[in-house]
Amino acid sequence: MGNLDFAVTEDQLKAVFAPYGVVESVKIVFDRDNGLPRGFAFVEMATAEQAEDAIRSLDGSALNERTLRVNEARDKSEENSSTDSFRGRDHRRHRI
Image (tube, rainbow, N blue to C red; front, side, top):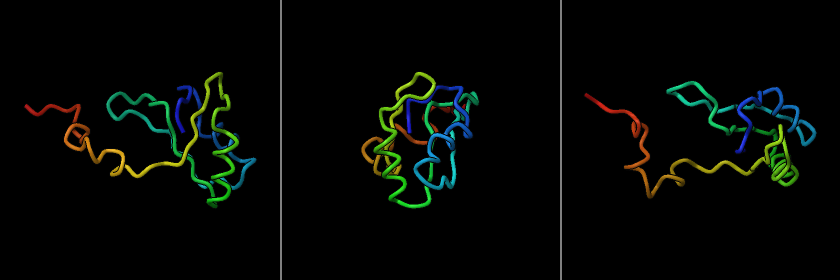
C-alpha cells in the first residue's frame, strides 16, 4: 500500500484492514538513512480472499486525507530486473 500519510501508525492500518479479515502483520517502511517513514507499508491478511477483498475495497479510499494505493506486493526481483545495477542496495552509499 502506498501514498500513506507519514503520521499513520501500524495500529491505524490494522483497524482499516480488520473489517476485511484477519490482519496477520503490518509493516510500515522507514528510510534506513534518516529513519523517517517512506510513505508505504505492507499488510498481510490471513487468506488470499481476504486480501483481495481489502484491495478492492480500500484502493482509492482516503486515510488522513490521503488517497490510498492498495495493491498486491510484487516480488522485488521482478520490479528491479531491468535496473538492478542502478537500484542496488548501495545506490546511495559511497565508499571512500
